[in-house]
Image (tube, rainbow, N blue to C red):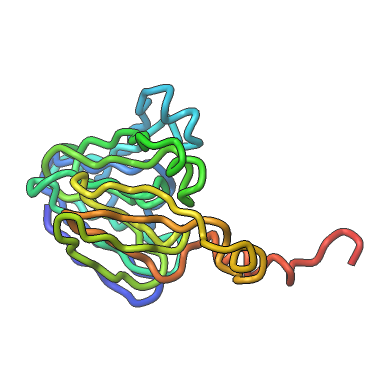
Length: 222
C-alpha cells in the first residue's frame, strides 16, 4: 500500500492498493474510490466495543482485478497522521481511528486506574492499535508531540490527549484549591502523563469546540 496525505484543515489520505490488498475502517470515512474496490461489512466483535459506544462493525475494502485507489477523509478540522505499528503499539482516544491496512488489530483498551477512566476526559475506554502495518488516525486541530523521559510528567488539560505509547502511564489529578476549581475555568481535573514514551497532544478537542458553540445554538424557546 502506498499513501499520500493531502489537504490542509480538512485533510484526506489517498491510498493506492495492490491487487487483492485490503483496508479497514470503522465508520463512513471513505470519500472516493476506484470502481474495482469491493466493500464488505463484518462484525468487529467484542462486548467492550459495544459498551464503549464504538461500532461493532468494520468496513473492509479490497482491490479486485487490479490495483485500486481509495481515499479516506477526516471528520473534523485537524490532521491525519500515519502510524507505523511495526515499531510498536499505540493507545488513542476512541474517536481517533480513521483507517488501516488489514494487518492492523484494533481493540478496546481499558484504563487500569478507575480515577483516570472516570475523569480523564475520554472515559474509561480507549482504543489500542497493534499488529503490523500502517494505521491512520485523526488529530483534532494541530499536533504537538513530546518524548517523555522515565519519570518525567506532563499535566494536560482534559481532552487534549490524542494518543500515547503503552509505556506511558495515564492518571488524573484534582485542580488544587476550591477557588481554582470554581472560577478558574479549567475544570476539576487534569490528566497526568508519566514517561517513558511518546505522547501526542491535540490543540482543538472536538468536545471543547462543542462546548464553546453550545451557548450560540438556538433552543426551542428562542
